[in-house]
Image (tube, rainbow, N blue to C red):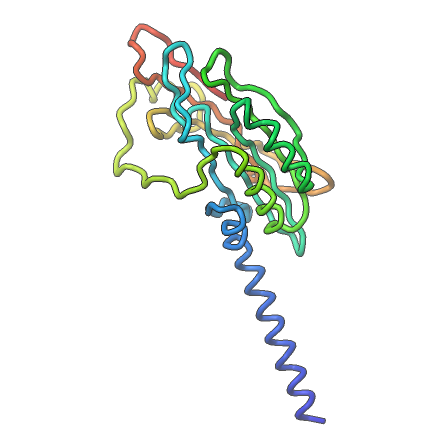
Length: 232
């Protein structure tokens, strides 16, 4: 009887240990299912950046940097056995319908579809997505949907040792907006999070959950007398 009890206790410990390991490793599994790894953000959020580095987009003759107005993203959160995903996908017009079809078939909701820019070529749309369920399964659905587009899922190129020079008065931007801006790939980005937590589909999630309120300024290859472009 004692041997049997010890066996049961040992089995329970092994199963519990495996469950704990799974709980701690869900981010790795999400990255593998999605086809691209991300990084942990404050609040237990696993965030994956999806910049459209494959696109060469211009607006009124000005080439737009991927970090300026072509930066898609997905954010995952796991609570117990369930999870939630939210994000913004940058798509060309021809990619919208096939990506949306795959998302709908997999149970991922499209909450908005709109444009951030006017007159840009090629024209880009921004698809907001929202899902609830198993994070790994949702990542698989998102991978299948993104495969209908040309969104790069390979690892991003390493960042340069020092940020590139930018023809903007970043000190004045910092003074005006408040949050200190950071230079990234020829653009300057200033972000601020909401002060409170939000509720979606009955879930409370931290302010770091989704993309913060963000303004990005860029003056790539534009003469000094012209004003910089700003994207929110």
